[in-house]
Amino acid sequence: MTREAIAPLPKPKNAQGAPRKTGVEVELSGLTEAQIARLAVQAMGGEAQQSSGNDWEVSGSAIGDLQIYLDIFLRKEADSAFKDLSLRIGREVIPVEIVTAPLDREGLFQLSDFLDLLRSEGAEGTGSSLLFGFGLHLNPEIASAQDCDVVRPLLAYALIEEWMRDAQPIERTRELLPFTAPYPKKLISELARLGPDASLEQVIHAYRGVTLSRNHGLDMLPIFVELRPDLIAASEGKGGTVSPRPAFHFRLPDCRIDDPDWSLDTEWRRWWLVESIAADTHLLEDLCREWLAEQEGVHLFGTRWVKRCATLLEGTGLA
Image (cartoon, rainbow, N blue to C red; front, side):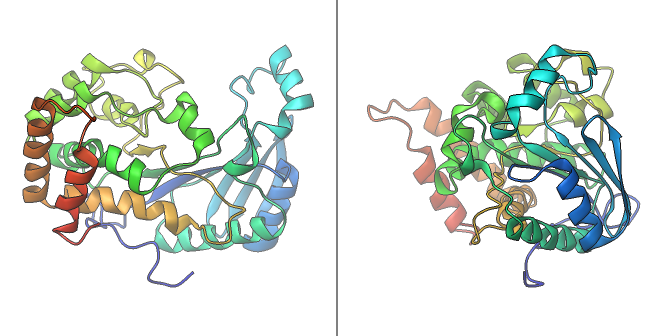
């Protein structure tokens, strides 16, 4: 990977002036937890140890600590019959998950190299399973707790999601599963009416009034609960436990680790685009206005938003 990859975000520093970091969650198959842990130590140093059952941890690697485990919903229940059954038959359909510590840009480069190593050792991605689509989740730290640094990236994503799914399709297996459901159009319209200068309080009220599901391409509940627990509680999330944190939970990207033309940068570019649009207030305002106008029209052959969105992005050199 060239050093032009993993492009710096438009706001590369956090509120303390330190580089923003991004946690990464990688789902894959073809290798066991133990194999991945040993390869991590081989490539990046540190110490691997089996922590619980088949779960592994790597501590002190060049990119910090890693957690590696079979991604079973009830995996923490040691006596769960479901867990036992899944461990016996699930490796063909349930991914192994690698969870990193928050990484700076150099750490993302090293993780990308490690994913290349896993590919060479037989790792398989989302296209290898008919039952489970494997994702690569990005958790970029927010630039600050100011309303605009949360509201505008959310608004940008909501407005371009339909275009992004058309221009950069995710694997069909993941599209059919509920884990990355598109935002409801009602939510997008409410966010567009509020606009780029909306308060976080207004946005949270709008969001929770339409959906409390965690299973969207961009799951905002961890940020909302972290910043405004007075407005929304962790227990209200549907589709998994909400862990409060000051980071976006970008669930849309694929893990196509067995594809030699794919890399971590392939998926990073999706989020870089979201934040680049968020940094352009005039573009955001244009997208809001055009989205609302599009929804007011009657179209016999469906929405024209994908084409209109592409035109607006092309006009700024972002598409």
